[in-house]
Length: 113
Length: 111
Image 1: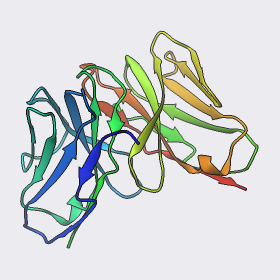
Image 2 (image 1 turned 135 degrees about the vertical axis):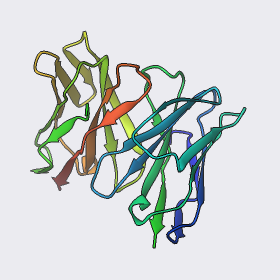
Image 3 (image 1 turned 180 degrees about the horizontal axis):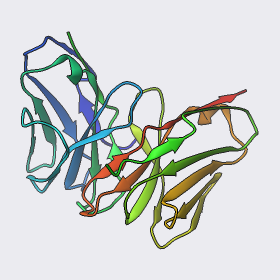
């Protein structure tokens, strides 16, 4: 167990809807990164938050947005869902924003119909 | 893209045998990490090797890094059925605040 939790574990939405995924970081970690993992692929970096500020973003459109709270828990919001958004969404916390070991949560599996 | 590529995509071995998987990447890195993922769940960190290191050991794991060839290998010795999982290499971006994961090697260890 990494101490990183995510909710919900599974979610089904329809195209065009909005979704919020949540992540609770490991105690003491001030950095959280979000990844999208399509079936059979490696995780793709969405963005990172460090001390409540966005600290890097991958090649994802603006309809993917995030928040990090003072207690370092985090949210990933996706608007206007598309079928291709169906994936496993992983959050990972780390002690610093630099190159450090990332501790992953179990993920949220999102299915868009 | 700096994304790593693992090779082979799939590997099936008998319990007790050694498993070797390789990772190639495209641009300079500060560090390279290997992760394991069981059945589409969260990734588990296995080992980190820094760009100035050539080899690192952790239990039954041995990782090598050749920065001149932009490649790394992960060796699992005396494999067990519980090692069955997907293995990913992850390289860091120049800014150091994100990782690029490869497509993974699916390892099956047959009891």
